[in-house]
Length: 213
Ligand code: SAH
Image (cartoon, rainbow, N blue to C red; front, side, top):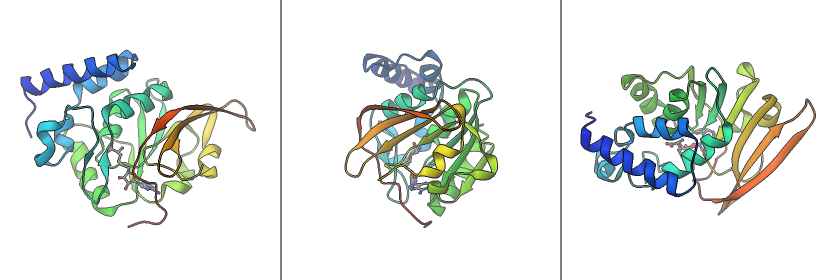
């Protein structure tokens, strides 16, 4: 598990690519420039870790494209100490970005294989989530709610209603909604009863599934 000057150079290139695609949150770019993405991937793909692409991880899932990670994270506008719920831990890369930004992260994964692997791996490279949970993201995490932000990193066929109710007033839910193609959707809770919805373009994710596996 090595991180070298060569990797740092590739990360700097990746950050430039993200800037050219419209990402401009300095904190998000800095987090991406620090985190050794190659360590989150199978060694067979590690050479491509700093391309702006999604790649397969275990259990037929993918590590999200860096642009997508940056885009979703930017929407959350994280401040140090914010309490964030992530649905779809996967490789843990997005989790690490959130932790790097100073968030207290709770993350749910439904694939046991990935859950176990990432739970061991993240602390090894110095990233401590508040809680990693093997469970179903459709129901959120009532016992730790309310959250400043909730980020869903799998394509949701519909909006899981439980998630909106777990936001603080002022809190944000970032969720890609749709079947084959998903619309990145931001909900801001403006009062106990009201939410503002913004649609922010098309993305492609692996599907958010019911039941654990
Ligand atoms: N953030 C991850 C993205 C992984 S892909 C990364 O960058 O590596 C999406 C993940 O969501 C997969 O690991 C998949 O198993 C998980 N997932 C799918 N449906 C889910 C559900 N209902 N609850 C929690 N996780 C789910």
